[in-house]
Image (cartoon, rainbow, N blue to C red):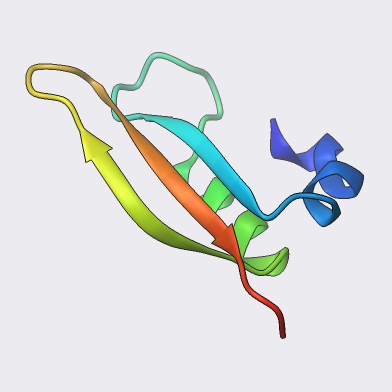
Length: 65
């Protein structure tokens, strides 16, 4: 997951993540993902939803604070 990617997150400006909307992974939390990204100054800029699919892609951009 994102917890081991602190150094990598500090070196990138854009990120695309596939978000699962189905309960298929143990301990999977969209809220936890959002929290980690927010702490690393990323904001959601675009969501791609796919009809009849149980996931969506989200694009995040790092903002300078």
